[in-house]
Image 1 (tube, rainbow, N blue to C red):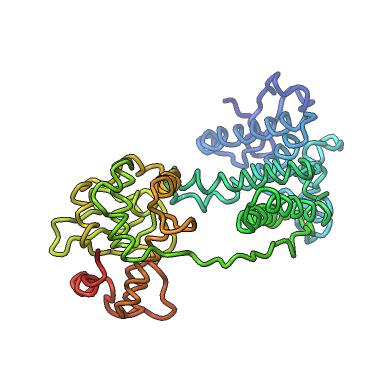
Image 2 (cartoon, one colour):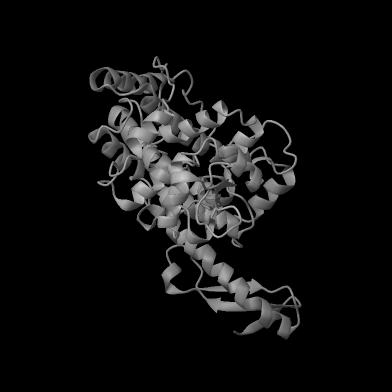
Length: 424
């Protein structure tokens, strides 16, 4: 690089690359390095030139009919100049010093305006229309922190219902800009779900999940992108007139049906192992599926499993816990000391597989019984045995609405003694 001294300071003089001829009228640029020491100039010049190139690139990308690209280029150019992109209405309300600073950057030496600079620093580029589908794509970026500790399987299961909800909304109201969503649109979507509930026998729970996901996505995008929209997202939930009570398997049914020799023979081995492990632990199906060799501790003084956030997120802080192994559950883990590889990375199909098998082979106590009913059965047996609420919560992975003192249910010897009458 060659330097020339002007007014006591060294300047970098370089030809403008042909690539930028459309957005830079000068053939050569002179850039002050604000020093008269050549060694300092040599250190500063590469970074200053790179910044110049970045600014030209941003201007070049902004010279397009693509509204999104124009807006992103304006934000990039503002950032390069050390400012946050703001719409013109907010630029006008800035403190006088910052406003004048922005204005001083948009005038060329010959007195003409550098329009790309002016649009970037003075808020002259309108944001692209945020349609429903674009809002969903933006939502993934805005909620990236929510996915950091989730496993690949958990991430997929988190994303899919939100994708489904937005797809359903678009099917009803179209992929319109979210700024144009009306109360009528949202009520139409709600009515669409009510019609499906009547015609297809679907539950209010399914409808409300869609409504909750759609509202959450729109609220997050509106808030974090500072859109300032008044979205019609209230009073949308649909009342659930079902009892909502999950049935539990009775002890007699488990002993005479579920664990009867050969009853589960047709179920794939990993699913069978997870189901049997659930009987005396009450873990969530996904928790059992995610157990690894290191978390299955059969050689400990008290054989147990340790539910930990290994490669996945737990439902809550309280969900991290240790549970003693007894009865059929201990035998199941002796058969599967390394865990359940079939479902370890993808537990999405586990409950559906088990529930289908139970219904097909007459092993569901009623039509309403599911695999998850075993978790509630474990809790009911603990309750019937008079086990203290603190211990039950510790073993079940539920939060305690007060400070935790001592080990409680995490004292494995105590927990094992309490669970012996409960175990099957």
